[in-house]
Length: 254
Image (cartoon, rainbow, N blue to C red; front, side, top):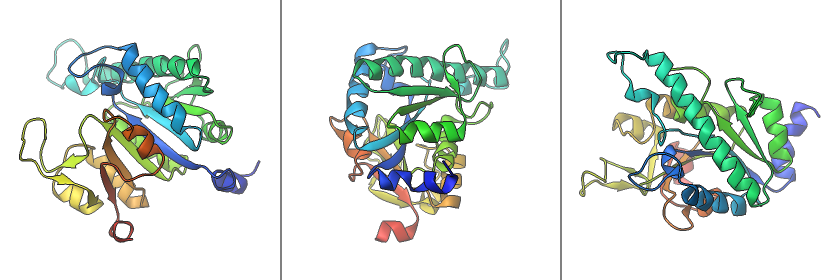
């Protein structure tokens, strides 16, 4: 099948294609670490329902297990680059848990990783990932970009552009983007929408600057929403207006 045919396939199937970024918070209870399968099953149930009408690729975080960024250059014993690789492996552990939860619900999935580990996952190859999506499989993307010093937010932007997704959906534990951390500042102002430039000029911290800059360069919209609110994940995957939309001014005004 040629590339031109691939580009039109989602439209022919009547499905939109999205990249869903799930942080490590989605794999555990609030305030806890590790993997709590009840939380993973709740996540899987919502994704499974939405995947019936949407092509879904999921970029996995790993902060519930380990954040590479928690080790700085001043840390003793573990080099910072090594810590980032450890964080990438944590995302693969989450991917294995979510894969089994989805398959228990009857979904067909493929776990793909940017670091080769064929014993547990397929290596990420763009055309192969594209084909899995066309066939209705949920694609789980682990190990970030495979390189240290790059966040999983930036990985989500990279994979969304490669797979020509319609939007990035960033699942968080707050309702969207605020002027400050709403968990610390009760007076933080909530934004229903922001241009890329507004987000960057305000130095907001929900997504890293590199990810937003990459999306701005290619006009790829981002929706940030609270996945813990009942039904929000399904609504976001279905294209409904939840949380905060970050996009160019033309899209926001339409």
